[in-house]
Image 1 (cartoon, rainbow, N blue to C red):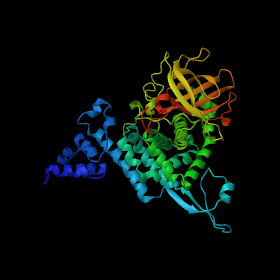
Image 2: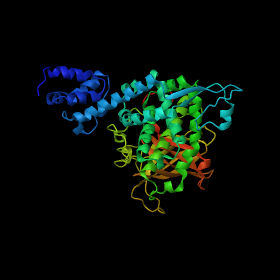
Image 3: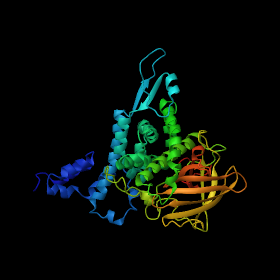
Image 4: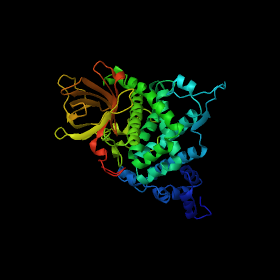
Length: 472
């Protein structure tokens, strides 16, 4: 069927319509229009006109670069524009956080404070304004965002990230960070008991948050913190983080979760542990950025110029469709993680921090060289494990580190032994694209009395005196 208007007319319309779905609707009108519009050239031109940088896609599968693979570029068009649309809608509607005021003395009006991080005594004695998350609104927003943001963030470009870190979205970004923490520790039932799709979207939301922060310019992150540091947002957010400490200890220290052959380490449990891991990294990262590098925090927060291609999400996620699919960084021999390519000869410099539960502060950083290792002689060789060891030091003294990572789940188990002083400490955690992270405790399984730890390749941290946000 021919059209009375030239096909170039419809092509120009398709170049400028706001949503990808509008192009698909237009293409359904007849065969000629469909043939003219559904091309990779159109979607590439749209991305260029809208100012998106798609250079991060150049190292994708060569087959996806063929000119006739229009669906590949349609997905990119959809993912980028849908992400920006969701941030714009949230800023316009301004409904992710609800603002209230505590009743004055003598006022018997009932006020609900649904924040798991604030004690009952504090609630009863507080006065003045306060804010709470609109849980229904932010849950819906994060679910939608989790379909497209992992692809957007993992194909990082400074030009693209700046579109969603614009100051007009700072409130939304802070609400995002607050929400993943509060949802992590305040859900009505543990994630592993929920339907698989619930684990899926929440894990992607947590991943995207730390991926966004660690790839952003440090000055931008500082500006977000500065914008909210004097508001009720900041206090409520930190309260939620403290409430999460105990929950993370339970998630990581349950003994059956540490056994690589235990069938209870289900995909849902793996995703639950990754949710906790990403949120713990977010908390440590933001504290390092906000406090700066003083005499005892001499190691800068890690900064990545771009993510390893093997750890990227390469397409938008259809809700409820992939909750049990393998995580990108655990495929192809952990190729998307910093453990890939470890040498048994020359150690790779690593560094990081550990915290104490309840003290909410760090010890000075630890530094060590990490190498690949053979399985311990006394251990039953696990075919799906890689082993590592290292030597290093921190303010306590020199130590040896020995551990393993399960390649199917990402679960990490390690021991840290000081040469001259102190007991042996045990680490339980997860391997992520951003390093290893988890909880530590004593040989009696006392993770509840330990704290958090996060370690990463040393070159990810800018050296003292380097420009903020620069690549080390």
